[in-house]
Image (tube, rainbow, N blue to C red; front, side, top):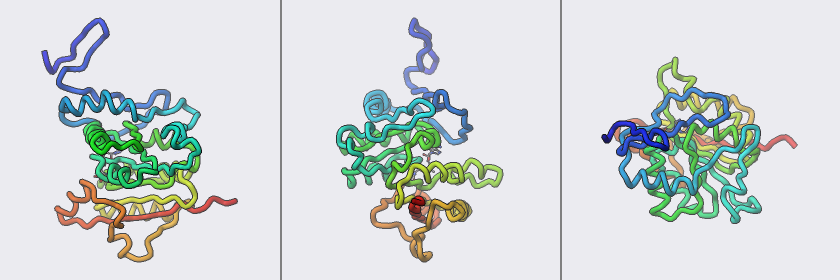
Length: 262
Ligand SMILES: C[S@@+](CC[C@H](N)C(=O)[O-])C[C@H]1O[C@@H](n2cnc3c(N)ncnc32)[C@H](O)[C@@H]1O
């Protein structure tokens, strides 16, 4: 029986030993092409339990089309006056950076967006183990979340080791591009920081070109040493470790959102 879809009065049920990847297409929104992996091997029971019990408590639901996410409500009463800075990590992978920041920045609200269900399960484990109360997670295409963010809501954004899509014909799949930067320019506060990292030098040049061409962002690096050195308040991630082990030296970029014209 296991491994086959089971039909019952409630309709089709997923096979016992597998978790079906929920449809990541956000309802009533323009259909986007997504090319990365959404799910890998079957999840262990502990991971499934976290997805079924913890994720619904801290998951971000997109608002109705045409409206924006209520960031104040997202983090509850502690954020009633919207005093809590809100940080976003796009594509947090296994969540080591997001959890590290959440543990040290208890006064900030941390939003993580990730589409890969195994990554989401690992992050949930970190949230539970460290008792993190200041994390909210969006499982789906981060671009849908970005489109729903209100103006000037974010104080810091991280895009660390995004998929490089090295083939030229795949460059349009890269998450760093004009559309994403336009959304971030709207969603970030004046003076907010955008941090990016990559171990792919072609993508590094692409990031620099996209960001320096965008009127809303200003590069914070003053010399090559700045982008060769990971700041102390920026922990290593799994992909960084992989790159270093394979002899690739990552680039760390920081930009600020320029003040809006008065
Ligand atoms: C190369 S991994 C890097 C993971 C992590 N940031 C790190 O440094 O270890 C890129 C991650 O971004 C996620 N991702 C790619 N496109 C995404 C999207 N549009 N929305 C949400 N997550 C995305 C992938 O599922 C993957 O986990």
